[in-house]
Length: 262
Image 1 (tube, rainbow, N blue to C red):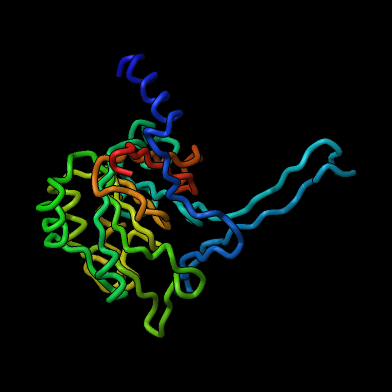
Image 2 (cartoon, helix red, strand yellow):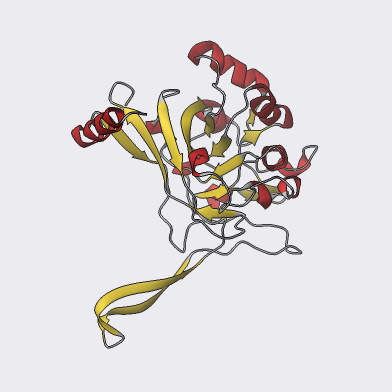
């Protein structure tokens, strides 16, 4: 990329010709986290503790200590998060090359079907039907499954029933199609995980995690505002914190959208 290209990009952002869309939920103590069976360890919610606030504890500054899981809120999954990716080279967030965090994004709109069926499945057929309308998913793209699930909150967001959570997600064949046939960069959802709520019942269990991370790909969860993105043409930036040996990280996910696509 030439210097003039970068200058033009900055000018277009300043002029509003390129819009920056925030795909991130606000981190607060009430944001839901995944709930595992009680015999397993649990994901920590976000907590913030005041250290000082322009007072006797620190007269000229205000700051906080925060505690949370790597996988709380809008977050990134590195390959090392899953057993299938434990031996993948450069598998933790601090080892991933930074250029891997930025790439073109395709948004597969499943919102109508997900509104009718909490357990809607993203299959190869759904993906190929999308491609007939919007073109083939390019190699190295981020693929996001839009369900408008991010408009839910609290108990409705987790949607727990007696048999566990219910939310949309990809089938094993669906995620393998994206990895094997389209060579995607990563996959993202508006739900609590990249897998369907009932993903434990697939073979293998939680196929999005298993196949994505085994292939050295990345996951994005708890995304928001996917309804503000076009099907194609935007650029996604999803850079996790550089945590040594980190399996994931909360992050600020941003998309650049040209005025003609906004």
